[in-house]
Each structure stands twice: as structure tokens, then as C-alpha cells.
Image 1 (cartoon, rainbow, N blue to C red):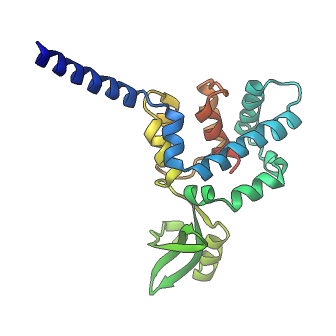
Image 2 (cartoon, rainbow, N blue to C red):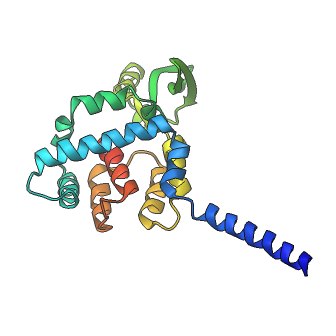
Image 3 (tube, one colour):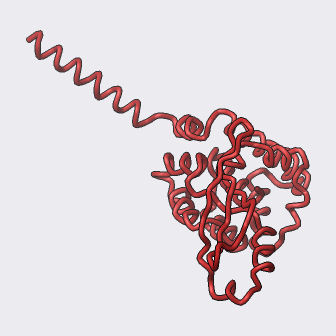
Length: 224
């Protein structure tokens, strides 16, 4: 009888720990992967966006309705909002490690014989840069552009999306059970999305902007 009780106790303890692990707070899981400093940066950006941009530009709307109005205007092709984001927030994001977890930054483009190559800053740690070099698959329209002009064109558009940085890894970890986040993660595998179409798509979900994740996704997708 004692043996049975011991076995049952061990089984109950194991099962309880399993349930606790399965029900771990998704925000904690997200922030553990993203990192403490990156999470604090993102929280600041959300707070500044809501308390400065939304309140200033939609003073008579609730936060929920202000987000929806913001997205509606983007879906209609309005990009003037980018000039109204606070300088502090723009500078904070530009200089943050979070920036480097979301984007690669192209720092050079060149031709190696007839192969077009580009180099990105992959990661910055304590001021030390790590690089990644890629060969560019040239599409038909690119072959019609002079080499010097093509290089200049690519350098004028220096960012590329990092599909497997800490931010996307964190979202992928907590996405199950939320159809919006699941579909968003799937779409972001291709990189940049078209703002107007994406805003229309987001509006169709009728999101709740008290949701920790939804507001962060909208902010980073359309503002930064």
C-alpha cells in the first residue's frame, strides 16, 4: 500500500509540474526569448505610441478605436503618420539591439565577376559587428539595369527582414492558439509585407488592443 501511495504521489507531482509548464505565462515565455533589454525597449515604444501618437492624433477616440483608425488610414495608402512618430522613439529603436533582432542592414554591394553579392550586418554585440554575405538572385528587371546603378539602388534600400531573429523566434514560440499570430508568423517568412494590404488584413481580425502581443505586432509592422 505504501508503495502504491509513493507511486501515486510521484505521478501526481510529475503531472502537476507538466501542467504548470504547459500553462506558463506566454508573456514570460516571449520576453525570455526576446531578452530583458529588448522587451523593455519594446514596452517603451508601445507606451510612447499610445500616449503620444494615438492620443495626439485621435484625441476623441478610445485606444481601441484609435488603433483601428490608424490601420484604416494605412489601408487607404496614408503614410504621413511616419513623420509624426516621436524623435525619441525613432532614435531609441534605431540604436537598440531590438532593431538588430528584426532587421539585417546592408552595408555593401558589389559584383564578383558576374555574380551580385551583398553584405549585411547580422548582429552587433558590445559594439562588435558580425556580418553575413549573400549572393543575390538577379531578377529579370535587375539584369536590365547598369551595374553601378543597381548597386546604388540596393544601397538606398539598406534593410532586409530577419525572419529568424529573437523577435520572430519569440512570436513563433507563443503563436499556437492565436490564429492572428499564427498567420502573421507564416506571412512574415517571406520578409516585408505590403502595408496597405496588411492593414486591411489586420482589420479583418477585429483585434483587441489590450492584448500584449497584438499591439506590439502592429507597432513593429507599421511603424518600425
